[in-house]
Image 1 (cartoon, helix red, strand yellow):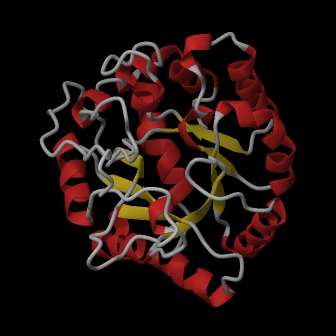
Image 2 (tube, one colour; image 1 turned 60 degrees about the horizontal axis):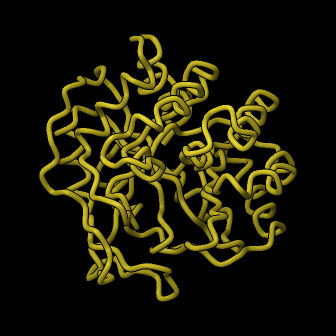
Length: 293
């Protein structure tokens, strides 16, 4: 583990908000354990181990029923830890993989059989090396026959340049963490409004209203992030997802309490119908319904 790495909280509070039965944590990770699933030699950071057993214990503690596990950059394109967690969870988890451009159709089919339903493209320069967009386009064509979607991770200042590429992908896209807006600028700032416009003009683009802990200026009070997430939930109720982002890799400001993160949900999705769409209907439609494993 890096000397400045903040390990996750192993005793999160019990949330005051009770999530509806069948709720999905649609963005979380597993790390290692390194003795079994080594971290990638070219990783940008070394986390603490966060194995599947602890992830699923957290799921139960918070009241969720299912997980969508996202491959993180510290494991590179070695998805062994992710696939192991999916096998362990059975039908209670789905996966988002990171793959090499030369991956074969048979390898993709095996991942599909294990529960993978998407690939992730990471454009955050401090986390990954730059990849030519032609490489991503090639991967997008390879996954198209499986009906997978693409999860993209970028920061707000990069959206303007990325928009033509996102449209060129011509598939269903899920944007991580609201495109990481700078909350100090406010909801009406052109940066966030550019993201809202992207969703308005492209019905195939979804977003995760997650990670207030990464965006807030006042940790652990996340109220400054609420207007951004609530705007997206209310304007695009059928295209939003929520997740814990456990075990919160590369946090520098504080160690989030997952119980407190759950208690943000009714602030951003204030009605039972919005909560059901955010936590059950949308992730189930995207990751479980009308799909064989």
